[in-house]
Image (cartoon, rainbow, N blue to C red; front, side, top):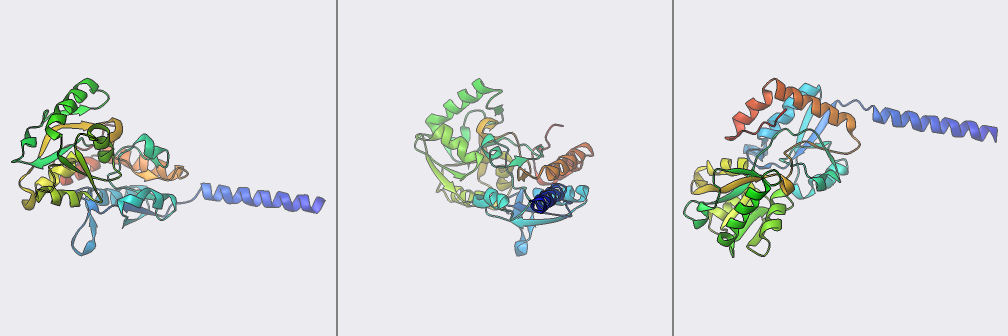
Length: 283
């Protein structure tokens, strides 16, 4: 009996030691997933090479954390399940922080924030949607935001709106325009951009940063942003690094690196390079 007790204590001690070692994991390489289809946040360039704001930011943050950075492409639909399964260590894919997502994963501090809105063709009656040039927070500016949304509904009644599925954008459109307009979901924003340009959609709904970048391309010269920009509520609290809930040390490392990038202006330089709108979050 005594021998069994000793063996049992040894096994418990070994398990505790293993748990402690895992808790104190030294991060030497961090594997980061991005979608590779959401320019200018992330996209696949010539030869399939990943590029964009988040690819450059990922490498900068890894440098600040003193780790090797490996950025890989992952389809949006499975990006959170694959993180939970251990396929990679973090997500940097234009992912907004929402309560629903926080049930499954944790997030670093926010590294970018952009309002969301409609993209339409310049020749469309929808180009005159109410509030163009304004930005409303769906909670802080609730009355103004709701008045504007209500003003959009008659113009959008019976129209077809394209949106990327399983995103904050699709959540917003479902909440406010289900039963008003036909909602068509796409796997990527690139797909709904093309359908808008081809006249197969009346409008698309996405982040202003992505819409502005698309409108700058020659093949989308007839596209414009229409109506007020909106943020908050189902659209989230800003874009951050997605992480497994147990990786508290890695979260602390990302938080510190992002704070440093904000403080020394590194993040502002990257956002100025990739976006035409201000994206750096408040400290």
